[in-house]
Image 1: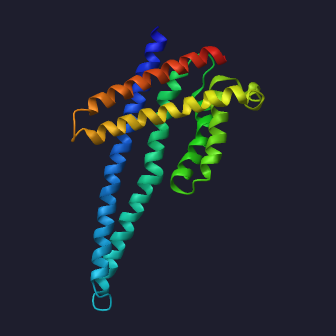
Image 2: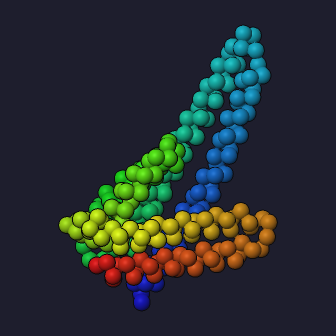
Image 3: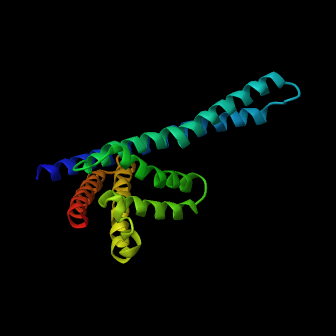
Length: 213
């Protein structure tokens, strides 16, 4: 019972923290975009031939803000989210011969493909689907049983899909609750749904740990 409660609390904390980070990222990104548009508008408004020094200063500021936005969105935020994922989700698997090193190495490849799919090209999602399925197998089975990923794909792949879709629903509920806070009190109901689905995810993980092992 204590083990189940630990997983439930860690999962709720994980989804809450990731949701907060995504919301803050959205707000900070809007700030960057606003500054970029301001500098861009000022640059278009001046006569470069008559105000070359001012144009160079504006261009330098525009480049600086754009670079900071790029580093923040593509590197800092993903690193923070991945660190939280490894620390907290890893803690829910922490028993027996669990190793944070192995958990990190197993998770990092699908995470990279997820980021590339979100920001570069959607075809990376195919690679994310394949590698995250393999990672899912390694979360619950030792490496020597990796062949089960194709031998029992008819059974394991649907289980993996549920394991993957549930977190997306939970994060969606938390984000939706945030957008409704200033509009209506129904955000409380949405938060309740987020907690309920987080509870379902935790219990599903406990069930899989027993069934698949």
